[in-house]
Amino acid sequence: MTPRFLVLAFLLASATPSRAADPGELLAGRSKDCPDCLLAGARLKRFDLSEADLAGANLAGAVLHRAQLAGANLSRANLTGANLNKTDLKHANLAGARLGQAMLFEAARQRGWRVSNRSC
Image (cartoon, rainbow, N blue to C red):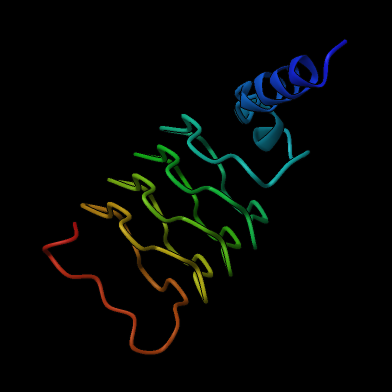
């Protein structure tokens, strides 16, 4: 085989899309990471999702009551109407997250954290 062929084969192999995260692994408690997953309406009450990667996940209407989300990446996540009551959101990344109608009663959050109506 020529070196040119080997380089081309390597580039094609590395360009193959990686396997998408499996929401079933998260729901079964075997994984904390599920970026861009469809988890709308999921029952995640009391789940330990600290340091989880849920960037871009659809969690609309999900029940996350008392979930541990400290340090989780929730950037770009859709949390519209989600139950986040009594969750630990300290140091969570919520940049670009949609929080319209989300319930945040007694949610632990870092000092100075605010939700504006413009981002909801």
